[in-house]
Amino acid sequence: MKELKIAVYAVLTFFCLTGTILAFDSPADWSRAAYIRIQDDYVGGNLDKVDDKYEHNGGDVISAAGSENKFDIDWMDVYFLDNYLKVNIRTDYVSGTSSTTYGDLFISTDGWNPAGNAPYANDTMINGENWEYAFDVSGGLLYDISNAQGSIVSSDTAMKAAGVMHDQYRHNQEVLINPEGLTSIGFGTAQKVDGYYSMVVDVSGIGQNFANLFNTGNVGFHWAMTCGNDAVEGHTTPEPATMFLLGSGLVGLAALRKRFGKKS
Ligand SMILES: [Ca+2]
Ligand SMILES: [Ca+2]
Ligand SMILES: [Ca+2]
Ligand SMILES: [Ca+2]
Image 1: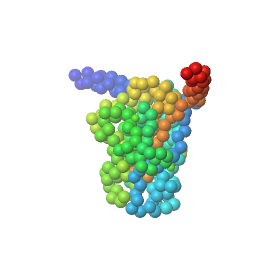
Image 2 (image 1 turned 90 degrees about the vertical axis):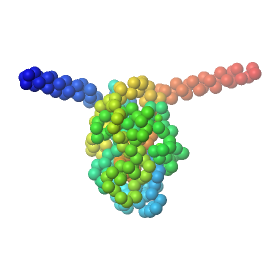
Image 3 (image 1 turned 45 degrees about the vertical axis):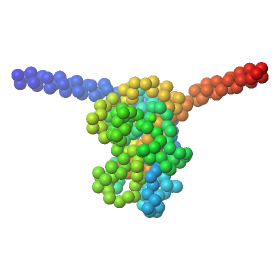
């Protein structure tokens, strides 16, 4: 009996190990990937208007004077290849700064519509885009949150949980996902690599033509550290070939209108 148990454990361990390896065989070479850079043109609310001395770079970063770089996000590089999504956040931020940690990645697969106009200074977690998916960076798992918007954790909740009592952070930002009761749909990794916080996620579980969504500009992203002292949001943009086709379609339509418009 003991031997049988050991054999069962050995088989289970083997499948767990190989299963994990097979499930997350991300590309080693990203040079063929579709790629877009999203500059951090997003400010987001709510800024702490009690004490404006903590707001820098036009309100984009909240920090003590001279330490903007501890939180500033410069841009987001997004790659897509063979069902894998890679999101590189260009930032000097490191987990552990002032009782904060790396936040989770929020993904929209039906476009990106933030509240208001650039730099979206009034966009919070309760207005603007709804996120259909979230990648939990600490658990390395992707979740469908289309019907679980209540699982989104705000910067306020995250800061209170970390025991931060002061108000010098960006309020009302979506920063984490609470995976309790959710079933994951994919694996991923997250780590700081040089000047980037790099997340790689298997998005095959999303079950849509992600390449098409990516290339037609329909994928939106949101990321921030748990205080939201800087946050970045943006979306993929149509690739030149798509733009060209759209463009020639519009020119064709205009020509038809001109031709048939004269008769009426
Ligand atoms: Ca920034
Ligand atoms: Ca959405
Ligand atoms: Ca929002
Ligand atoms: Ca920002």
